[in-house]
Each structure stands twice: as structure tokens, then as C-alpha cells.
Length: 207
Image 1: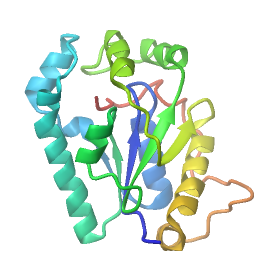
Image 2 (image 1 turned 135 degrees about the horizontal axis):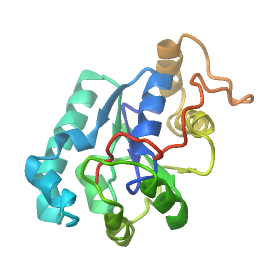
Image 3 (image 1 turned 90 degrees about the vertical axis):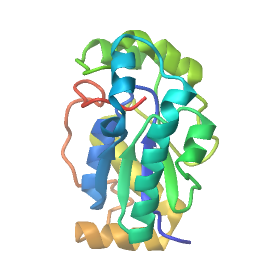
Image 4 (image 1 turned 180 degrees about the vertical axis):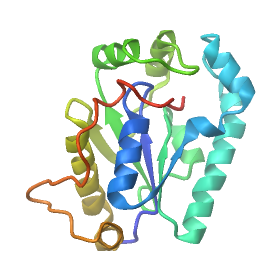
């Protein structure tokens, strides 16, 4: 198997993409990119008004993200990308093939995610847009699926082990080289401490 170069942590706003994505990047020695940082000002202003983005709004944003993904693959520079990637066509636009680019879907109930959104401050994503996110959501049929009911440390541990299992020894070797030691599959030891619950005080999530 080939080594995964890009891990796309995806899901609706409030699922914990930024929190978990950063922790996974730290645990695996990967660079981290929050897709929110590439939204053009027009998209940010629209979301701040409580207006969902259209596919036309997303097109240049997805193209910019794809360029980052392709650059990471070309340079063999491992990257964790936090991005909603709600629909199958968005994931296709990002180049997710479950080989070099693997999706990690953070799965949680509406009630849990709504509670987390209500408890946090967000630069431009009001809680009112959550329903539009769930309406647009097409959960991946493949890739890695992780429940967000657990602690951040447990979620990261599960993701690291699942990534190694899904992509084989090449990725395992990259992780071991980055962390300086083999990850303990049996103990499920995570190389990170437990921060607050994902989504509770996140940096902005992408749409």
C-alpha cells in the first residue's frame, strides 16, 4: 500500500474538525491547514449573514484547497486538512481517493453538535446554519468514520490507529519516524493530552 499523504478531517460545523485536525497533525507529525483560512471574503461575509454557500460560492475555494492537496502530494509533505467536505462531489474535487488522500469523517448527532455550537463563539458561522449543513451532508461511504462522543485524546488515538490500518506499513513508518516511537495499537496510547471537548471552543470550521 502507498502512504497516505493528506488526511481530510471532515464533517459539519461543530463536529470538531479544527480541534481534532490539529491534534492529529501534532500526533502524526503532519502539517495542518484549516480550510476556513482559504475562504474568500465574499464567502465569509455571506456566512456571517446566515446565508448558506452555494456550489458556485464554493468552487474557487475548493480549487484553492485542491492546489494545496496536490502540492502536498507532489512534495511528499504530509498534511492534515480540516474541511467540511459535506458532499461527495466536494470530496472528489479535493482529490480524495482513500489512498494518497484519505477522508476522516467526524460523526455526531444533531443534538450533540447543536449543543457544542451553542456553547462556542464563531467568527462567521452562526448556529442557525447547522440545519443547512445537515441538509447538504452526504456522509462518505468509505474512508475512516469516527464518533465524536469520546474525548479528543480517544478520538485522535482511534484516528491514528485507523489511518495506519487503512493505509498500511508505509504510513505507519511515516508516523513512527515523525513521533520517534511506534504507536501502541493495543494500549491505544495517544501522544497528546486531553483538551476540551471538540467543538466547544474551536477555531473556525470550514463549510
